[in-house]
Image (cartoon, rainbow, N blue to C red):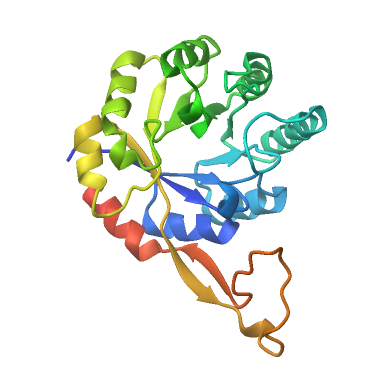
Length: 249
């Protein structure tokens, strides 16, 4: 298999450290992966950079639930982007749509220009998977100078969207990078790479860890109506990802 870049989706500085240990080539740093990934803290970025010096792309997403933001939310995204760029991120990951699911070109252009002025990369994330006409959106993103697009081929799992991803790569003709992600595992990785013809993939693989500091009172919860175990959290499984990296040549 020819060289393929493996990007790991991370939810913390510890995730980045484990991805680095596994030999990942690049990471996307978020917070709150349960909700699809939100903007990470500056502290996470600083620690992750200091401990690994990896290429770190950082999410700019002010809240969960869709990609059409209020004025205050978009203003927050701009301020977060400024801070991330000033504190060592290698690029910004974002996606802005209108209420009807079409590309918000104006907002996309603002963040793209911020990153480009700083000499950094840009990624339009899986918001592209809910647009009606991905070819038209790709054309606009290419015109705006976006570095790459993260996509599952407009399917819940990229293993079901390989035909569309392959079509996207052919349509792009090298004008924008296409990064397939969502649902890639050690079992289906080779097939997805072969069927799409991609040269990079995006994935996450976590293992559970324990934190027994809450065990004196198991009746206490700190979240909302959905109660996850308070004595457990997830961290990137470096052994699992390391095995995948070793297969990519």
